[in-house]
Image (cartoon, rainbow, N blue to C red; front, side):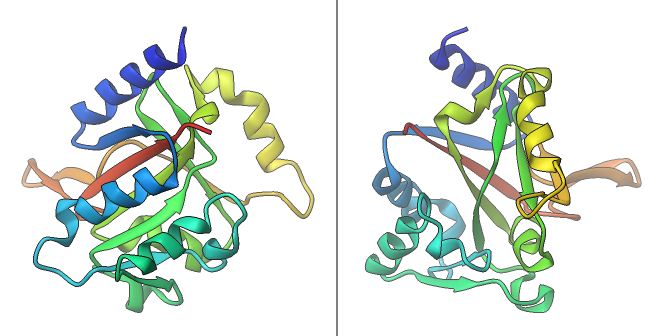
Amino acid sequence: MTTTELFTRFQQRITAVGGECYWLENLAQATDVIIAHKAFEGKEHSIVVPPGFIEKPLWGNIGTQLQEKDFIVQEARSPAEVADTPAGLSNAELAIAETGSVMLAENKLEARIVSMLTLTHFVLVKARDLFPMLDDAGTRLQQLTKAGPEQKRYISLVTGPSRTADIERTLTIGVQGPKAICVLFIDD
């Protein structure tokens, strides 16, 4: 399956559950998508990132680019500070085309709350980390969970915005997580 076919499948799956995604050439294009997103209509241009995110070699530049566009980029510190902020930005270890899911892997609560408590979650993913099915990502999952200093202890697959129908069987979006998710594939 070609990369274009994988992305198309991912896009179909995530769109079907209320999410959105984009295929972008670089972080500058990702910055433009974030800035223009409806998450900031009538709201402060502020985005929360995991601790140390801006120092990450691959992703850190987007923080600087957002700041240059008058965005406030703040590191997550506590659940109370992050809850219901307009947007969060983090990265996924990989994505699964068959389900339209991203795999988030972190060790610290401060990093995990960005994807759980913000109203809109922007997720950066390297294009080469888009796999057809979860089985195809098995080796990568083993690497992430292998004991040692790089081991990830909290791994979750996220497919679309938070949704539940256990309140009088009425579908409700954003009760136990973000109301919106926007996956940004960076063609590296």
